[in-house]
Image (cartoon, rainbow, N blue to C red; front, side, top):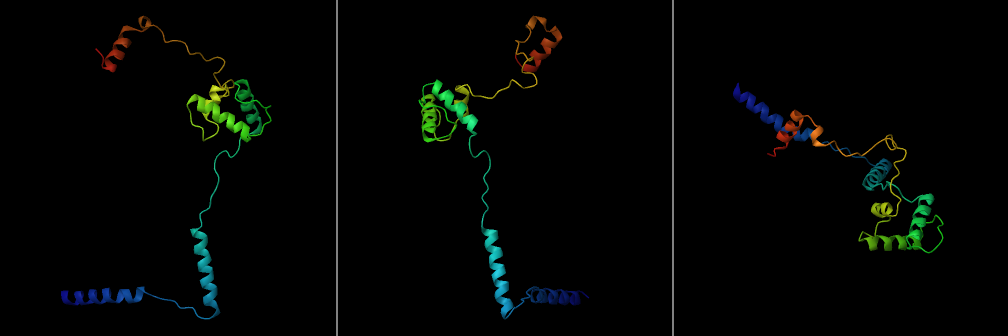
Length: 156
């Protein structure tokens, strides 16, 4: 019984590659059509698609704001025109270099903040009513709570 099983298993293992390697040959006019379709499909798959992401240009209103700030800081002597031209770019590079910041990418967020053009939070939910008051003095915190903070901090 074991011998029969071993022979059957050997025959199956030897025959499996013969059945697995099936080659289909196409001849005549169909061969060139199929070859061309296959080559173009592979060429299209290999060609990467380049998509641009993020902001590609600065809005002209924002450029005008930047130019006005650069004029105010005496880095730009021309009238603001809303065009990110070489004069504006050179002025921004000079401003950033004077601050010790990078000059290759334009414009740097730190430079915009320094020019007074940072984010505007005036329409934020708590912008008008929010306060940044100092925390209450330690003497007003209940003793048990203060002891818990002290114990939690690990400082004795």
